[in-house]
Amino acid sequence: MTIKVRARQVNRAFQVKNDLGKKEILTVLNHFDLDIQEGEFLSILGPSGCGKSTFLNILAGLDDYDQGDIRVDQEVLQKRSFDRGMVFQSYALLPWRTVLENLEIGLEIRRVRKKERREIARRYLGLVGLSSFANQYPHQLSGGMRQRVAIARVLAYQPNLLLMDEPFAALDAQTRETMQIELLRIWEADKKTILFVTHSIDEAILLSDRVAIMTARTGQVKEIIDIDLPRPRTEEIRSSVEFTRIRQNVWGLLKDEVLKAQNYARDCAEL
Image 1 (cartoon, rainbow, N blue to C red):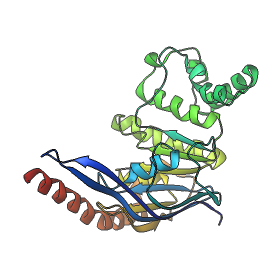
Image 2 (cartoon, rainbow, N blue to C red; image 1 turned 135 degrees about the horizontal axis):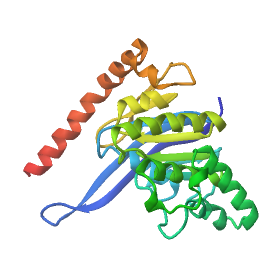
Image 3 (tube, rainbow, N blue to C red; image 1 turned 30 degrees about the vertical axis):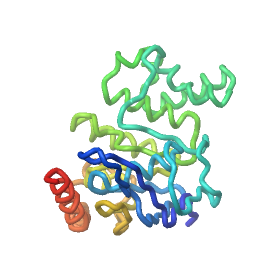
Image 4 (spheres, rainbow, N blue to C red; image 1 turned 90 degrees about the vertical axis):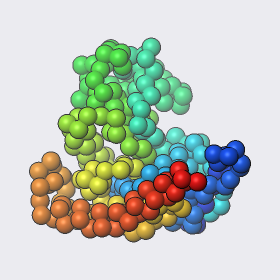
């Protein structure tokens, strides 16, 4: 299996002020190691503050790392690259542009000709089932539809690596489950490499080939679980015996880290 992303001994720390106004060093990632295989769907699970989103932001070029080595396609990570696309929790759509025009943003930056980028945008809008909404504006869409537009916008400029930071966290429960199945359908179509950050165990298991479980601060990979469930996956797989078994295994590894994070937050509040 080809390695798409390889991270070794990655450290990231921030200078912050405590409640007394004194500067402190907050270490978020410490000797962080992770391999992501070409074409796989890998999710990262971990307690709040463990460094999940920090690592995602580093890969996206939105943050730096202090030490270590990160390579994408065996090349040292470049801060700016069209080979990586990011989907955020918020939709980040431009309200003054139509749905189709929002999809064209990345292609405009790449200086793709207008006719070609319009064709590409329409193709990916069709992929997420929103062709009939091409001339609508973001405020005219539901939350789930806006998130589909955000995903299509990233896919339209055809990145090789798709980074997703809790993209369904703001959605209601029913829409979130619908979007999970929709994302699986889109991923099955072209098998892009996806790194997906989530707090939901069920979401991680349903979507992923593997799940990386992170420790509480400072963030390291505690264990990686193979999700040996058949594909393509449907909603019904949640009720299977194997899904339940995997969930219990993942929670058994994760719960101690969640408790550590909660205890750390309580201790800080009492200082």
